[in-house]
Length: 125
Length: 420
Image (cartoon, rainbow over all chains, first blue to last red; front, side, top):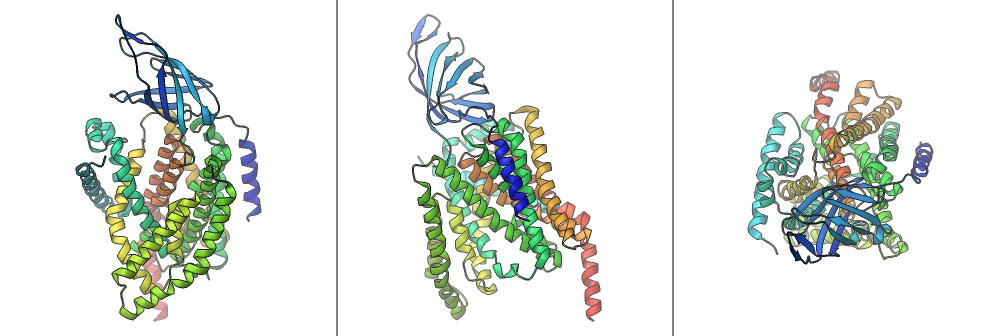
């Protein structure tokens, strides 16, 4: 009564070991802009900004702590992260993941950024 | 910084919503707690945040939720103590083959089916920060839980507590609860150890020492409290404070060990002396504030984290349907066939399966732990919350359909006539 379900469970766990999952990007990030922002002709420097990503599989909700709590729905496809006016490449291991790409604010030229994850939200510690 | 006005306003709004929706649900013969769970969901992004995002943002700004969470966690600690307190291991004896078979299958079947579903859901709703093993084990545990308190309340409201099917359901649910919490504790330890700096042996050895101290030291001291109660027919405020401190100390011990503070509270309740008068007295003392004030805060906090139908498109509804079907098949179907195999008539076996399928707020407790430790994603959390609501909601009407009150009343009348 115990042996059969246990064997079945072990089989399932073994079968699932090779299943690939989307790259993890959920958690708190620090966003640093590599270039100045051009909105019209005047360049403006952008301070490092906090970014929160809530991820469910390939879908993610990005919330930028820019005073307006700008949110964008994003999609993870392999190492590519795409959202409206944002493209980035995901690299590094889950514990030390980084994002590099370009983002565009309304009425401004695209600006390059690099983001570093503060701590992946796993383990509840 | 704590905004006291906002916190008190939040509590007031939550309590009013919980009472109103709870009352409305009672009108459609659902348990009050079902309405309170739904009230929590309605206050979150699934309804209020969707209909009136401005009001929702003003009433429940994200920064303020940590205080609401803290209060709800305190409520859960007391609630888990109450659940452990209501659990009487001696009642589990004497149900024989049917109870053993049904309780084992009602855990094994949904656990295996939940883990099997993980093969499909893992690449779609999880990420590589969670291993498949952790995800699948959690899915199995979350599918196999039964809401012992809600089930007891449904049986009590229908006068089925002392029926053969009712006592069997309570016995099986109690076994399920204890097994489910042990499995969950193991999963929490697995996940936390994988991400913590503390070596695994500290958690494992510490947990064993903790359980031994609780069972062989603390448990032997507790009858002194019962004796004090018997002398005066009540406990002094000082002794009640001692019990609260013991609950908190036990909760802190398990949290420090990396299991979760709710396990400590549950175990403290489980090892309390079980004489009916003493248990009833403590339940009366601890239950009211928890059920009326603190649990609705937990439901609201859960609701604020739940986004039913928000984002994810049609796929989310498809995944939800899969999870609900699997949950019902595993728990209801598994329990029903096991009870039938053990010799119960089909009607009673089906009623038992329906009762065991009630997941209620115990499921919400487990899901919140899963989301907190990061083993399930926000979308998976919402799907599982929806499953918990559906399986709890369907219990009363299905039970009335399969095992109508008039049938039970007729059986009781017949027994009385035979005795006469």
